[in-house]
Length: 196
Image (cartoon, rainbow, N blue to C red; front, top):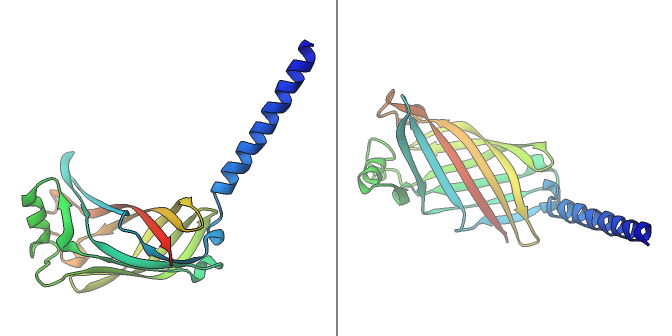
C-alpha cells in the first residue's frame, strides 16, 4: 500500500512539473513569435538618472508624455522602432529640478519640444533579447545611440519590454554641471506595446 501511494505521488508530481514547465515555456516566446505592429501604451514608464560624483544623490526623473510605435518582424533584423519624448512633461522629485531640466541649460523646451529616436538596425542577442541602434535627436543634434531590449511579457494583444541605455549628454549640448554630475544619462524603461 505504501509503495503504491509513493508511486502515485511521484507520478502526480512528475505530471505537475511537466505542466509547469510547459506553461513557463508557453509564456516565454521567442521574439519572432510576437511579430506584428504595436503602438506604445500610456502605461509605459520612461525613467532616467544622472549620477553625482562622490556618491551624492544625483538627479532622477521620468517623462509623463511620450508616443511611438514599433514593428516586430518575423526576421528580427527587419524590425523597427520610432519613439518621441516630450521634455516639457519631465517629472522629478522637486519642482525646481523640473524647471531646471526644462530650461535652456538642459532640454530647452522653449525651442525644442521633442526628443526623437528612430531605429536603423535591430540585432537579436538571445531568444528574448535584442540590441536596437538608431538616430536620437535632442536639441537639434542627432547621434547614433544603442539600447538593450529584453522581452518581459507577451500575449496576443500586447507585449512588454525592459529597455536600458547609457547616453552621453555633452554631445547634445546638455553638459551643464559636469564634472559634479555624470556626463552619462542612464535610461531604464518599461515599455508596453499594444497590437494595432
